[in-house]
Image 1 (spheres, one colour):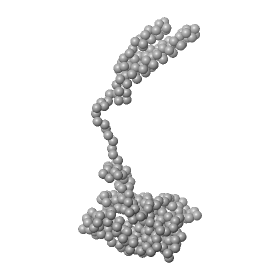
Image 2: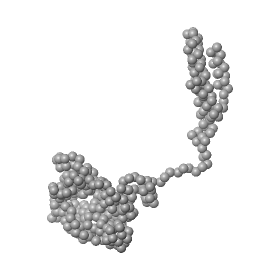
Image 3: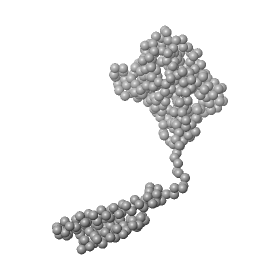
Image 4: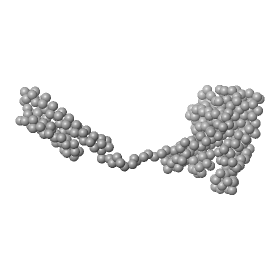
Length: 345
């Protein structure tokens, strides 16, 4: 009886030849489904005598393999006839395309600054973001009681150690120290990178931001060299006609020190909210390298002199693109970033 069923269904399987998806699915359910013919036949097989099992076992396995092979063969044949993975697709329609990306505005500004100073012979130097007290503070002439050493300003990682506390660098000036320690003048380099300050995040401040610092050390370097270098930089970045002024300031690692302002790029000096109606915007700090810093790095301060400057890339980008909220730079909002698609190079 069981043998007759297998013979009957074998003939039906061999005769089945359609590749239509719906009929092929019905074939699968009828023979290979959980309530299909093969499942029923295997249930009947359990009740036959041991002698019949020896005879029918091989036949039943071959029958199951035949049904599976027929289904798989017709399925593949049907897929190829309809275009394989593209079955059901109208291949004459235009493609969906893909969204074009853009460079981050901070990356664009950083590159532009680097290219300007490259024309003056400045190379790019980099250093670690996790620094020791010597490179981040002491070598740069920061007194022990300086407020920048306070926990409110610095992210300390580990207290103590051979070279003092370990912290996230608060400025890229630490790279200047490493360069002067391991080389000999002349130095002419830019130090771009990310720095960290323990500050409340707001539209005007963040706990991390990006700086570019510059260093030039050689014989007979003067403040006039510093002024002319920065004046050239401003004219290249913001255009001819941009005014510059220097105001006396204080930094532990430079003497004399100054802050440099430019005429507001938004109102052209007439007064606006960005410049607080003064017509001027501060963009960087600068000064002559303090002789103590040179000596700390093993450089003869009587023979060599130099200047240094530092600027926040976010501040430059704010002026260039009129961006009012610093948080936009780090939120990865594609609506914001897509506005810079025009500068893809």
